[in-house]
Amino acid sequence: MESKSNGALRFENGIEAEIQAQRYLEGFYEVVERVNALIDFVVDHNQPVEVKSCQARIKRCDAKRRSKNGRFKLKLTQHTYLLENNGLYLFVVSYEDKRSRILLMPAKLLPFQKQYSWYRVFHGGFFNGL
Image (cartoon, rainbow, N blue to C red):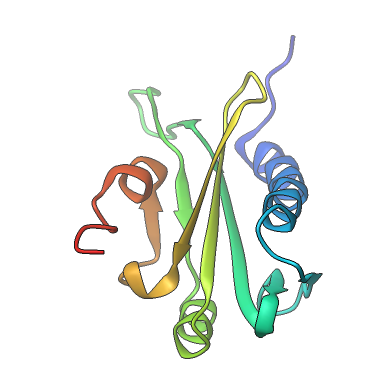
């Protein structure tokens, strides 16, 4: 079986993550609308939701060629919009066996940086103090 490139996996996972995200959100909110502009969805009372997805493990490009935890890549324009509008991130981690993990998090709990490993988002203590 031929393995897919990281780029092909990212594309497929992104599409699948948005489908999973919509199903997940529909279980908690009465209104879920796809936006697909600056953000992916709005839910009840126009609260924005941005979906971020990654593979659980990705191949490294360095000489050692070991794998590492996948990364969520954040964009400052999206993060700022979410902060200004009480928005949420919905993080989806995909495994090779088609399992996934989902985490819905208020954007205000996540300090902006360009990327986070999925492990840090899910286990990094961003919910401490709530």
